[in-house]
Image (cartoon, rainbow, N blue to C red; front, side, top):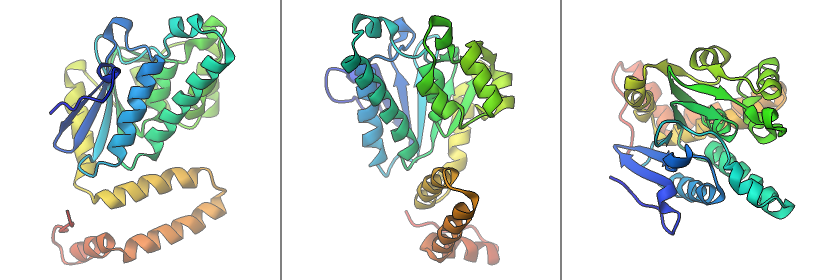
Length: 265
């Protein structure tokens, strides 16, 4: 069912829930889903709400109309070219990206058309990404005298330094096949199969215990920022806790007994 968001900005992000998958659709198709301040607020509200919703197992980020997202609404920024407005806009954008990472549910970007600048940032910030064969990606701000600093944060944490640097410094597009080879996305499928492939990927995670998925996501990102010795120490503590938890005991017992695990709801 569709669940409208509260307030005047409710139409900028559409929410649809179906069998544990919550799809958030950027909904400014006439502006190619360019992200303005109101859309950021709508995204933040939606993600915060979903993070507390145990019925949602996976979040999908999508775009209405011909493309996924070209980035920020440059007309809005140009009309408010002052430090308080611009700084607050990018602060709010960064908070949305962090909320995507902090949400307990896996987040999948479903990409078609183009994903540039902050649109590419959304793809990089998502935990997973499925793209249509026609999708293209770029951090194109450099072409307009604006280095894509904020998109560069998740981009450089997804792909190698030299490839991220190339994208950030040239602003050139890469196609879906290149994005797959570089590690920016997980799947490339024909446009007609984009939705079904995204749902199939989501369902691969939905038969796992939600608490384990949430803890695993949290630990995955936490250990990335640690020196390797600290990462192993934290990992040992995490897997010990997991083994002794109800889910670990049930899952291992099921494996030993050659039966399917019976997860608690």
